[in-house]
Length: 355
Image 1: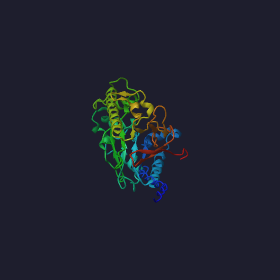
Image 2 (image 1 turned 135 degrees about the vertical axis):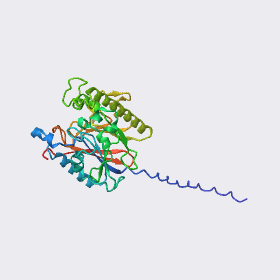
Image 3 (image 1 turned 135 degrees about the horizontal axis):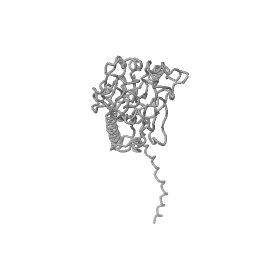
């Protein structure tokens, strides 16, 4: 018989196929816009210079405006300005036709360019604004003492350009929210917290002096505003602002938006212990569901206030060359909006004291 067939040699295992390539990674978010934050800028040459060496230098507001112009030209994508109030020292504007719109605002910042690139390329630069304590006065008494915000002179000026073709005033109400960058979900929340200073500002509104002799004293009885009425109106506005902040924080968290911008005239330490039906104001700013940056003014300084009182929120105070004295460094803040709807790279720009 024939010999049995030899066994086949073992075959090598088939070569292992290389693993499939990983899916393409998402590119990191990129900058789609920049923005400025400024406040306490409404320099009044008749009221500020009398303090001599202690006064803000008359050219300070103009120097800051020129620095902002150069920064905006270099970046090319500054899409909006956040204005934290005290825009018109010492007593606000008396109407939508008050010449201060030109002399304190439009003429000072008219050289700021429109963005030439980024999400808002070619568009007018809105100044998102709130009232400060010096904006509320007998010149704007109806705003301080009436519930109807449409009687506020700065609200009535919403959309005005006043001869500055590259920018516009933005204040549809005393508190509001907006999405300032085209195509971005990032929200900006404007808050009227002037109740935090009602004990001081309402005496000037009602009595035209530092201290009223009684809660019902009136300097102008025909117009009918008392210190008590002013304070009550501002408390109602604070409650409405707090409810708006709560609603926008909750909306951002529920919709998966990770970042939020908010601003009022008052730094975080002025908000300590302030409550409304919506909850504790500082607690809403410190909500860990969103990354929040909060901007304020009032102290006439340019400061990073981020700390135990604000964290995890970042907090800043801006002083733009107005105010009653150089309580601190003057300047502004520049920030960036990224393609994923986040904010980033918040940076204070301080002017040299020698300037």
